[in-house]
Length: 115
Image (cartoon, rainbow, N blue to C red; front, side, top):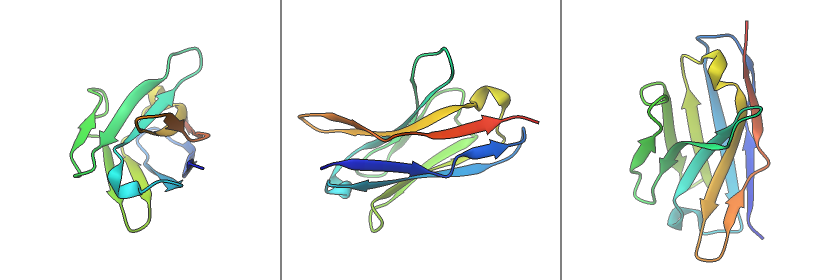
């Protein structure tokens, strides 16, 4: 059974930083591309960042330069380092991967940016 478990969310002031983690189980982690999505209240879920099997990264335009995605295959974990956070970054952040059969999602972790 594939499980993705996110952690690291919380309340942070504008300009602050958070590091999200997503631990995967039930898959050969090193063989999967990983992605981070987020969903703000009343909005559609959107892609934030992705990291490939080989470590190539991609970002949504609004996050590039502020967010960094990385992975540690020895820990089956993908990270999202978020710096210079803005109120508009407030959302539930989800870890995602997929294979030929299914798309997998974590339960999400809430990030709230507010003074």
